[in-house]
Image (cartoon, rainbow over all chains, first blue to last red; front, side, top):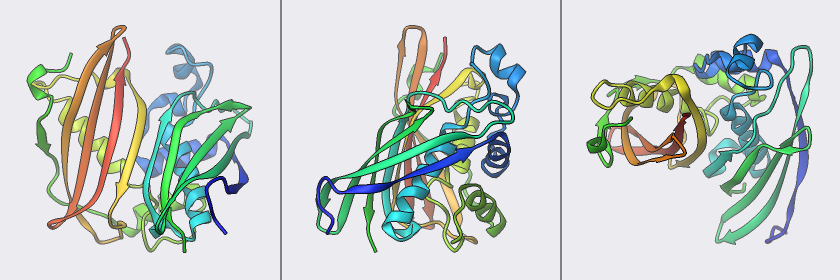
Length: 132
Length: 129
């Protein structure tokens, strides 16, 4: 039974530089801050960072896995508050949790929390789904 | 600095972008989505950001894309996107403000399949001081 307060199972995804390159190619976003460490640090970043939209795409997958398919997602939004930092040769976590915030007819609103290395990377992350 | 008279205006973008199966496959593969019959929910960002760049960096509008960061993003999905869809694009500059030297632009993308609105999305784009 799904009701307000129901928790979605936690999921941990590991990101690495190869995933950032694959996302750059798939999305067309070739900004060097997501691939080139020298460039990233030259603009004041601690290291290469993941595309905010990659983080969001992975959280979207978490939501649609729970709802039973991509067609069930109606609204999805998030604020990019901190970067996911991806050093060379490392795998960094993206840890995702969700809680049912509202149930209106067949529409379920989910509050989402995404962290990396213990730091919250998305703010106001929410999705509205119709669960299969 | 964004031209003040551009705020509130809607700009026509590409009138026909055809979605290919290989584009959906590549995007789905990155996030581990096995179902490629329909595009993942954030897939159309590749179209919207490209359209925003084309429109907002026109000399008469004047946004500096090189110092841009993505502040937030929201999608409303009315109908899933599939391979073979031909989408027309428009962008509306909903608001603009300057805070601590940063320019903050809120822009909406509407993607239509014929007369049907498929996806609206909202992006807050920040040009760093």
